[in-house]
Length: 188
Image (cartoon, rainbow, N blue to C red):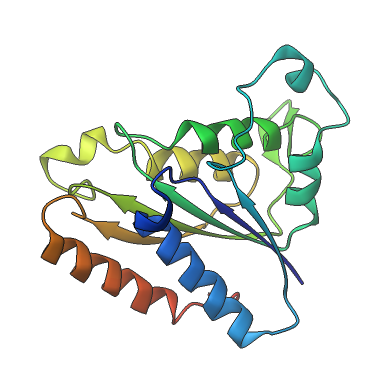
């Protein structure tokens, strides 16, 4: 089984999403030591923004090949300005490719990548899961829509919210998310 681990936070060692995504990978590989892990740091080795040569390439790209080869995808993402980091968006632009991960039909778009399990470690500075700020949350909703579009209907999200409130709230939120990550399994 192959696992693709992506981190997109620009915060390096101070990143909550990186700590949580690492805990998810640790849990999955502890349960199955035969899992082969490929790691890509989208902040340290950023992809350029989408260009016509990438969009118009019917054979895809290295990022698409890695994604297609993976059985499991683990993504670490912070929520910046109500959505995902641009580094992660650049990766998604290379993975959502007509004819490879989705196709258009007379009945509408059809996802072609539904055989993968996706885990997302999502860190948010405030509380966007419910209440008045929920309408401004476009990270989880975008990722659910993008993965749903390619046939991955139920990605698993492990959330750390309120991490910018204060140090105590951050510590509790990240610890709870890491604890949740420790209980995850591929069949989850």
